[in-house]
Image (cartoon, rainbow, N blue to C red; front, side, top):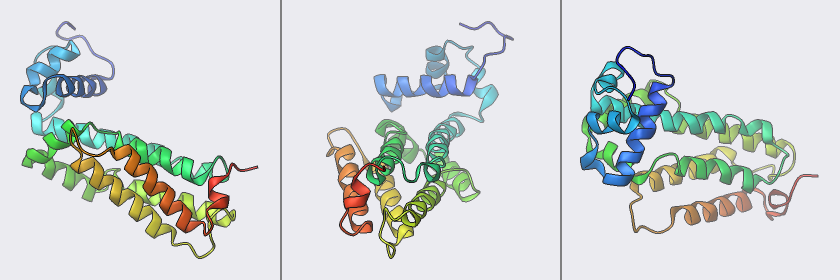
Length: 207
């Protein structure tokens, strides 16, 4: 337990990681500020010193995980011409799908104040689905210029279809539901195949 008054490095990350462990182990009903700080090995009041209550904490946890994926997606355009289009897209799509445990998304959806904070933050420009979609479109445009996608492919529609579907799977997944990873991988294959015409150039390694 960290003593009072001693600074804790990466306190947000530490609290977020602790909350995910509590949720995975004990479920939403067990998520309290005391449980989170206890799991993190921090002073009991630390969460409220950094967040405006538990709803704000949950919202920031969700936004943090989305921002991580948006940052990763931002690297995609520089990967054009490397590996396969399906492989590159699949990596980001699965990262988004795995960014939050279903328990976390379920909790956010059942707490109206947290959901509203998330929505308002995204509308105000916090990195999330729109940023990820824009990065995917830019990546597909780059692959199109390299000839690995058909010249007439609607790259923006491909990005929208991919991100929109993964968003749906992320927000509606629950224990016992069909394997969302397998669904995502099939979707990537279908979208890339359609965008590449025959699918041959998108499916092979770049020279």
